[in-house]
Image 1 (tube, one colour):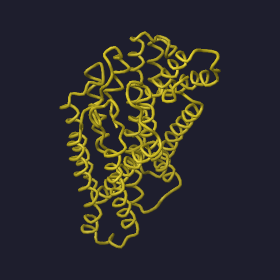
Image 2 (cartoon, rainbow, N blue to C red):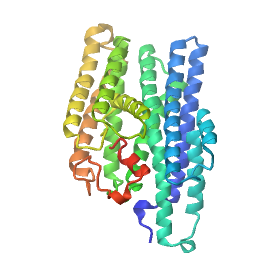
Image 3 (cartoon, helix red, strand yellow):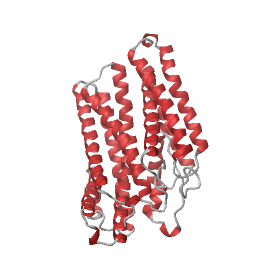
Length: 382
């Protein structure tokens, strides 16, 4: 009988469609919002909104194309159904991720319609494992895109809304889609990661998933609110955010990450990791990172808990403002809840199994090492 931890079910297939739906809506809504700013002569906001959209698209297309080439080197020449030139053209027009969605949905639909009598249990396990490998590639691309496009978009739109103290329908939709894109990327990546690596203990659903999601979303959104308030205090805070990105990128460089097959692409990956570390903590190299995580969240707490009082001190006219009181309450409440969930998750709910440390990536035999496997275990770990 097929083991449930590697079963690509009908529900999983439907959730893939939902993920595609959210992906398209998020992009189109942000493009629509950029056009709105353009017609209102807000050219800087329009340009920044478009810049975040295309930065996420561009980086995800680059990694998608390289991963296709890596898969072909492993002997999966038909995985994309196209030549190298055709694949390159497809990614140049930013359709590479959609191409992955199409093949996953097509192959998954055929599999979920099969009856158990049409193939052996071993054949089903192999096919379902391949589907989860395809889903994991997509989830990794979506995670990169979420922190290059959706998270910065949340910050930009919150800054604009808090500065104007007005909220349009399109801005509200942008906030909602960006938030759900980040949430979906976190949950989907967490769900697919270990199911594509059957030698590693699966992350259970239910309470562990809920607590992990609350930890990530509360810490990320409260941090973004803090950044937006600091930007209201002074636009030059962007210089500080750039320095934070440089620190994160340098740390990834010092750790000597080995996610990519070429040095140029590895440098790009480290730069992307730097962006992600501006918003949240991830295990960059699959090692025990207890000390690094403590340092990160001490710094995080200082920023979050000091920002509202600092804004009230330096801008007295906002002390009784509803938006400052609301934002301060969300920052404080989100920070406390997020940190409580972080402690609860890593003390009691984080699945260790064969992992010797809380975040250590090992347990795969040498015989299981492939380009795909090395890619997954060298990517960002929860």
